[in-house]
Figure (cartoon, rainbow, N blue to C red):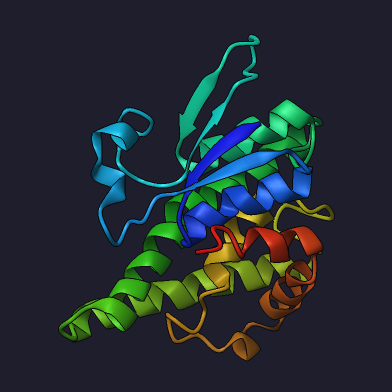
Length: 207
């Protein structure tokens, strides 16, 4: 059984959704980042960067336990472990990784900053709200154009690129985005949200 160390954030939910999609048995260890659980020595031994999520798989690639942090790396690992949600055909594989990196390098950091300054900051910072809000909407535009000709971000098939991106888009209200402005994203978002595994994974941890 895989041990999942997580909290109710977009990055954490990427991995719980993936585990649910794969049907792999896993045990949840809530890491309450509001209380600083991510900085305890016990957790730092698992994740040196003091971020969630992280996993420990007793059945690693060489038959020995493996511990991984960074959500993108975990998604690739689980996809390769099971042969699902990451195409084997080279061209389709690289397109999937391209859109996964789009999430890791663009959507995650900029949506996260928009969340912070628009919802959680104790003092309103107009410059930050404008900067991160503008970039967030630009990224929505990139996704909307891509999804105009594709069912999913990397093409016709549902992949780890979608699994990585969906939890961030699920917080569109946090960054003051109206999905009606991005109809292709809305169609994609609504379709993925109906998947049973996504519904289950998005409710982890149940605290």
